[in-house]
Image (cartoon, rainbow, N blue to C red; front, top):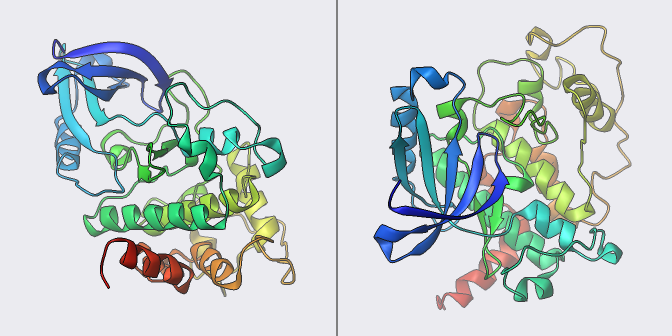
Length: 321
């Protein structure tokens, strides 16, 4: 750890404290140091976790936060050294003026002032969604799931680009029910197949989370803000209707599905999001399909008509005429 000079504590992640630090071996660049607290501290770091994390160092994509290094200290301490970004989407949304659905909170010190000018209008939502879908597509193409996508682990750089953090950590360390400080890990973005006790899940779990984040950017409010697993399930059922075998084959076989669940009907006339155009609503609906096998993939989402004008602009911005 002698190559890293801790500057300040910047937060408490799911797995441990996160520090802003200086990387002395690489020209003093600023990095984020994530300390991973492992449950069985006396047993050292499992070699499987080290192998999983080592794979993540190979991940190179403009929409993914870079993992620079893994430092294994004192036998049972693990530090992950990430590219540093000083803002996440949750803080960004909270910093929006109250008149724009935010909470008017100040951005963290040192954040580029130009972010104030960005706001969260339709064009920025589309840009963030495009970057989010591209980042997820890249990870899924390398057979890596996130399993815990939420606004807190979508980071925004000074140029207003969105990048995904913490991809692949769930497979290495599991997704705890509580953080190491005993805070409850949010359930608001969790796919129904996980909430219903499914053990086998696939890339669809991340696409459900992307849909929840999309709706929240549009309305400035979480779509399914449940405060327990059953409350989360019922919030989903109330809005989308209680799923049946017809629309989700196999749903009644999930360990935590109960035949006694209330049978809510979906209100077909109420759009999930009132301020989205037809293409955006179509994309959101495809992300929130109950049956994971029928949910849109990240690759399909990147090619959805909602992004057509954004992709065309990006094409010209990059000089491809």
